[in-house]
Image (tube, rainbow, N blue to C red; front, side, top):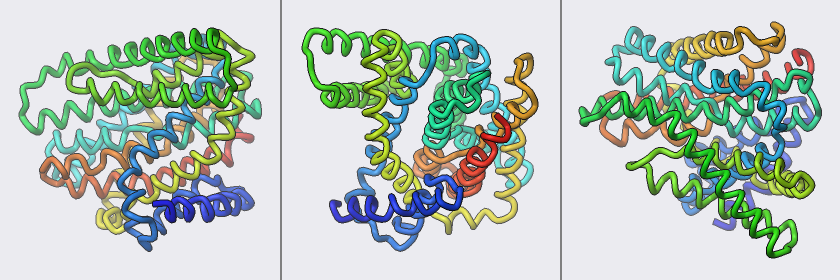
Length: 390
């Protein structure tokens, strides 16, 4: 495993820089590198690091979400709170059902199979969106109307809706005794419990920091460790109560910067440094999960379904932004920013296949294809359009 980690670091960093020199997001280079050196490419990475890939990717995502929370301004969040809530639900729901209906017509799926496919693909990737928005916030791009903060907040909750509705369709396929109303009620409960868990976590940490003085590096390690345990709590209670733990992680950073601004700013600088390492791990290991051969099996029909999904998501974004003071350029930027898929699709694409769902192999192929199409499209789109549209 140590050799694989060395390869990831020694190749990942220069590849990211090379892409940035050509005005292409470095994360895209890392994704492509992951595909090339992963088990479905040259198979250079050792099985050990592939086996713990999911945990490493989760830790990297936790780090960037903590940094995201530390970068959110209270006034920006208050101004965009309702719109962010709409952005977290409406685009995913419309995209999911657009894909579901398209797969019924084009692939001969049942509506339940189509729903599973639709809501695997519908989840936007915080791994791609959050770092991009943080960079814009730090460079004060779009801060007049807090557009990056709006997208950051919406994208962090988007997965909750998509994953919950996917779980409903998965349960319906297995003909389990499922109360759909209760499952839908779990969405706001999950969001609320996630935020409350994050707030409770940060209040305990702040008490510890006040009582026991320590260096900022140790504080960062304690925060990361506690955040990891918070996400473990979600896994532990998943069959009893839903908790949006990643949203709770971001809430931790937000409350910390509000309660102790000076310390929060110092910790944010520490997280920026850690993110350099985490970013390489996250995107290369996400790329390593991608099986291009499986994706190509879907052919033109798969491409059409993905594009139909993007159309549905774009309509959802426009509906969510109706009534706001954003101009057409800013709305277009929001549409572009909501395109990328990666993390959820890599993690959940194989679940239907593993559970014996008919056409599970096609669902996996389309999930992979959605990463190959939307991750580059969204990452490059954000990079090139931010200055022009914001």
